Amino acid sequence: MAGTILVRYGELALKSERVRRGFERRLIGNIRAALEGIAHGLKRERGRIFVETSSTEAAIERLVRVPGVVSVSPALRTSATLEAMTSTALRVAREVLKPGMSFAVRTRRTGEHEFTSRDVDVAVGSAILEEIPGVKVDLSSPSKEISIEVRGKDAYVYTEVLRGPGGLPLSTQGTVVALLSGGMDSPVAAWLMMKRGCRVVLVHLDAKPYSDAKALAIEAARSLSGWAAGVGMVLYVVPYGEVLRAIVERAPRRLVCVLCKRGMYKAAEMVAAREGALGLVTGEVLGQVASQTLANLRVLDAAVSLPVFRPLLGLDKVEVEGIARRLGTYEISTKLAAPCRAAPKRPETRADLNRVLEAERKLGLEPLLEGALRRAERISF
Image (cartoon, rainbow, N blue to C red):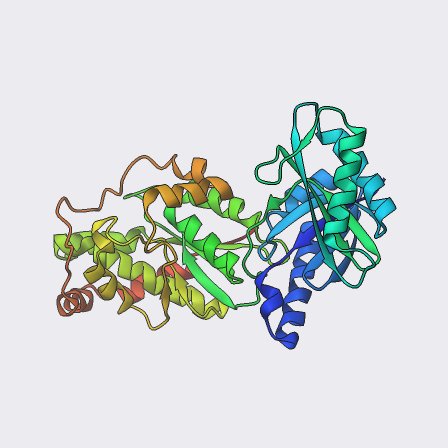
């Protein structure tokens, strides 16, 4: 027997009519891609998408990972009459309410009806009190809420609201390139840009023998791809060891981290040119490590012409961890134990741009970066 899943989206409904239609089409396309292999029907009304499927649990598991989806609710659909809604709500209440529990009925309506939302609340609530012994009404903090959404001739009864990512549908805001280190912060930064509607291309700079996070970066990219239905995920793995060796052996020791990061920015910008990307994304958190001081971030920005987006800049570690756990990359990131062996004991925290540019001129990194990009591995998920 097919059930109904209410899929809610938020800020799309606030766009102009033309923009909203385009965003809705994109969201519906991404939902269809997410539900590939699951038999389903789909219809749309303003502010809602309705999925009909007999595989409700499997469908919900995928729907809550689609950017643009605010929340979903498994529901029973019935006619928008007091009798039908009361009967269906009683069926739901018998499944979720036990003696001693409290409940509240919440009704929302869209369209013209001969009854008010209050009429529905009273009729359904009275029937539940009469039919289910030992329960009571509590409008402030009920054990269970029985929600009824009335839309035209149909009504939907549900008790669960499961959170989605929210934001905007993927690919409505263009493409960005995100640096992916293998640590905790960069996957979260990439995901937050996905949530804002960006197609994200990932770039991992493989710095062996100084660090070895390639396997973790691939694992994190695969995890992120689970949020990219309809668009997919691409990861470039760029061999960066020779570039970093040149920096370590020939540059001022205290500038190694800043020069290394600028080289990564430049490599990411080269990938952006290939992919038609409009900006770069990093997982930098202000003041977290030496290269992420405000003075050094200014020096890093000067390495490229594209804008650099830092969605984590004002967050702390606890906030980042919370998001990482939600999107499924926390356990992956905590496997990265060894720090980079190229880092100096006393890195520069207030790098002078002129001194950095002079060091780069002596290094001549451009040919090394171009060679590394030619050997890059492009992995699609």
